[in-house]
Length: 467
Length: 83
Image (cartoon, rainbow over all chains, first blue to last red):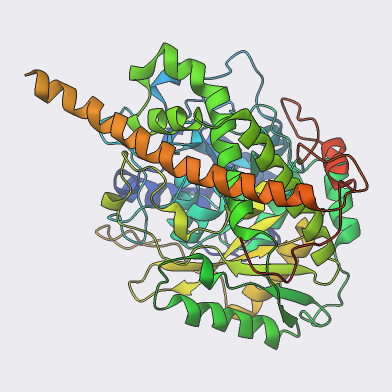
């Protein structure tokens, strides 16, 4: 398959005749055939992709206008009803499907209307919450850079599939970081829009005040193109109104970016993380951005408030299922749901007050800066053996996504190169309310300056792509 | 026999107790922070939910607009140490 920085570039190549949708689809299928047994991306594969590709190529051949995502292959996390068979949430409890009485999700319907080809459903943590467990009737997702490493969760298959070149983009969901964490660990770009910007109709709930739907792709440009296709029209209009207008070639001149390294919030830092983070800041500065040191208000309490909110809301959502059919859930999910029930209503409400206060204070902070960057994680992907079903939150202390989930603001993970083990590190770019296109624009400028989009990862132990 | 069959359940119960202890610590942090917020001068009734009402599907702009409404004092912690 060919790496393109954007759907626009892909469409340019289609019109120029240098590739076809069918050829790209065949290359992606070959990659999946070769290595999906190792990385565990797909739960179900669509049966009509060849026909959809032929239709797209016919539009190209006839010179018809191409829809925004014409011919773009997309994997869909299996908590989103996508019309591709039962939506399982990777749980034996929903082997026959969750929400079968409901219609296809708004997000996937909009993707189809935009011309995208939905190629299959992708693996997740059970109910977008637990951790992988061997011996269940679902593939265990693994990191394409090193299958002995965790791919991050819970949109694991979506991020791993983009990294491995099984599809050009993916949909994920994000409650405490479930788009951005696997994107960071798999070395791809993952975008959590602001709360409510993308409809959640037809999406399996986890934490009602925290759940988001968003794209994962090789580049921020493709994330933007997918976001523009699935966003609510009002939210998109608001984001467009708040996006800075810059002339081509002016980089990030005049853009003010707040920087919080968060080094004092973690116990462990990968030896290469500070260097990679500083190198990314230099790229932003060289593009003309003004970098300003900031401190996020109430970082620790905000992160705690988001995690408590997720756990309490998840227990309220799935506690009855846990009681009725415990054997159908994995051990990690039961542990999380049981612990979430210990949160008093008064503490849940205190958490909401902290979230509201942080949101209010961040609005003031964003009066002085256009975006705020932090590390996405201070460590690279942990070994699979370190992600225990008996300690399902063990990898969270190095992760900085939850704070931004709690305040519902746009947040994007962008890869910034590998650590010495060859595993990816990531920068988190965050924006104000309605700042989706501002955040995406900064990441697009960064990636354009940092180099061409990376080719898909060749999964170790799998023959290199001969296409 | 019974020892072997009980072991996984025991481990799961211990894991729940450990995580519940961690959760209690987080609750204490949040309670302390919320209590400090209560001490601040507030011109409006305190905001409770961060985004206002949440409907089953999309969150919607109404909720965000409600959340953005003033609920208290200004940027009391910006520039100060973390908690």
